Image 1 (cartoon, rainbow over the protein chains, first blue to last red):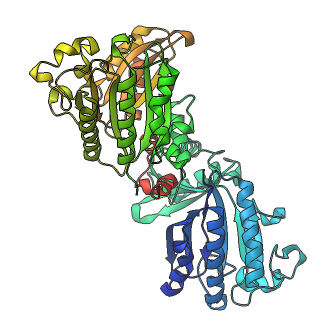
Image 2 (image 1 turned 135 degrees about the vertical axis):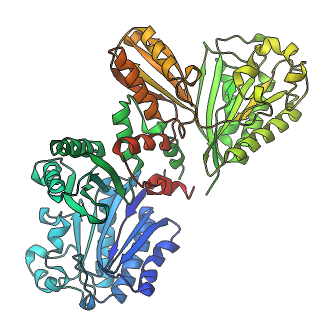
Image 3 (image 1 turned 60 degrees about the vertical axis):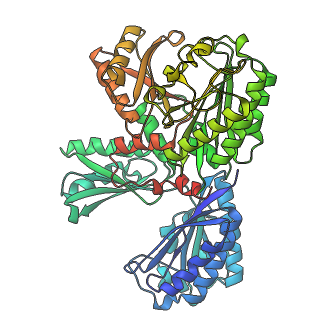
Length: 300
Length: 300
C-alpha cells in the first residue's frame, strides 16, 4: 500500500516557456512522481503544477524544482494580478492515499528545512504545518508581498521557520504547508443578478455563519448570462458537496431562482462524489472497499 | 495503461475447505491477478470467487483452477439450492479498465477452447460471448442442470462450443462468457407488506415494461421488518442507479410508502456512483480525468 500525496506548487512565472519547462522537468523525470497537470497564465503571471507521488519522490523533485526556480526567476521584475511573495510562492501537500496529515506536515517541514538551508531561502510553514496560529492562513503570511517582505521579515513575529532572516534578493520568500484536499465547486443560478449570488454566498460560507468548511463568493458569468456561487470546499469529509448544494437551493428558492447546474474545477477525490451518491441514494452500510477502483489502488 | 478485467467464477462446492483452498490457490499465487474475495455457502453449496487481473493472468489462473475443480468435484454427489450444471458452473469476465467488450469475449473464447481440450469439458459461451441467440441467457443454457445434460447435450441445438459432445462424467458442463459489470442494488421500503415490493419490482423491471437494464424482485426482510426491491442493474452506463431509485420512489409514493434506505451488495465500479453524484448535483462538463483515483490508475 504505497503512500501517495498530492502537491500543487505555485511559481511566479507565467510566460517564459523555457523556464517553465525546466521547473516541471524534475517532476516529469522522477519515477515516483506523476505530473498530472501544469498551467501558466500571463494575467496572473503564475505557474501552477499538480503532482501526485510518494513522499520521497515529491521531496526530491520539489527540492530540485525549487532550486531551478530560485536560480531563474527574479521577483524584482515580476508583476501580476495574483498576490505573491516569492519565485516559489507556495507549496501545499495534501494526503491522497495511505498518508496521514501528520506525515504530510512532516514532509512539508523536511522540504522547508532543506530548501531553506540549500538555497538561502526563507521558508514559512502554513496551514496544518504552521508553527504559530497567525501562520495558518496563507493570506496572512503573504500580506505585504515580495515588495514588503524586506521589512516584514525583520519583525520577530515574522521570523521564518527555516532559512535566513532576510529575503532572498531575487527569489523572495516561500510558504510550504500541508492541507486537506480542496474541492473547487461552483453552482450556477438561472439569473443574471449578481446581488443574488453574493447574498447566497454570504449565507452559506463559514465566515458569515454558514457551513464550517465552505468559502464562497458571488461571481458574474457575463458571457453565459448567469451568476455563480463559487466555492472552495476546504474539507469535504466534514462539509459535504451536497450540504452546500442543498443549502444554495434553499436560499435560491427564497429569491425565486433555480439552480441551473454546477461544476467542479480541477481534481476531486472520488470519495467526495461517492459521499454525494450515498446521500441521495440513502445507501446504508456501504464500505469504500466495495469500490473496485479502491481495491485496484491497494496494489499501487 | 494495464488492461484489467474482473472474473467471478462459480464452483459447485460449498463446504469442503480443502478443495476450496486448492481452487482459489492459483488466483492467490498469480502476480497478475488480485483475489478480491471468495465465499462459499452450504445452502447453495457453491463457491463464488472474485478476481481482478490482466487477460493473461486471469487466463492462466482460471485455467489452472478449472483443472483442479474438474479433478476434485463430483457432480453426481452434489445437491444445493442454486441451479447448476457443472463443477465449474460459470465463468463470467467483465471489462474493468482499458479493456473492450471484444477483448473480454476473446478471453472467454480462448479460455473455453483450452479448458474444453485440456480437461475434456464441454463449454458453452454465453452473454456477449454467445455464438447463438439462445445461448445469451445463462438460465436457458443451464435449464435441465447437471442431471438433465447427458440428454440435452446430444441435441444438435445444444452442441457445446468447445470440448466433447458428451458431458464430463463428474464435472458436467461449464459456461464461460463476457458481460458488462453488474451492480446488485437493493432498495428497502418502510413497510412489511411484501405485495408492495413485488408490485414495485414488476413496475420497474424490464421484463414487465420497466427500465431496460434492470432486473427486480420483491423480497421480504422479515428480521428487519421491512420489504425490499432487490435489483440487478445489468448495465449501469445505460440504466443508472438513480433512475431505478427515483422510479421506485414514485411507485412507493403511490402506495403511501417511504424509501427507508438502499444497499449495494458486493463490488461496484466508482463510475456507477459518480454518475449518481453528477445527476443530483447537476454537474456540467465533468470528466472522469478529474477524479484523482482515475489518474492514479493510469499508471497501474
